[in-house]
View 1 (tube, one colour):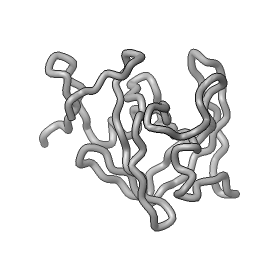
View 2 (tube, rainbow, N blue to C red):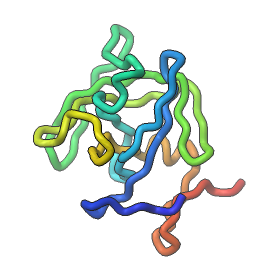
View 3 (spheres, helix red, strand yellow):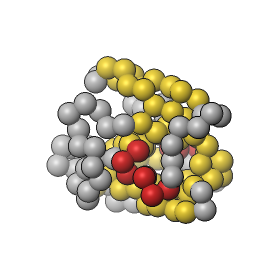
Length: 136
């Protein structure tokens, strides 16, 4: 994938989620090597029927913006640049204070973290401005 730099100077990407027999490509995720887990804001996946259920783990995200609650849920599958994994744990939360909570084409919809990048063996090449999987 050719790296796309967003208006705020961050790397943007997308991730396809499969859940409840539906699929959705979630755009405008910040590719964030400083995030241990991927988090997607719930406004971006409403049509997938993702909500907190009894078996989900309640977690807190920590970062520069402070501490925000989220829940960790197993989704049927995730896909990123040819990598696919079943029963993958993803964090879901609400947009941070001051961010848009409505989905549109320009809203940042979460962070793609190290959990997906490591599982897929991805390389971020900033000289070539590309993200790709390591060849075996």
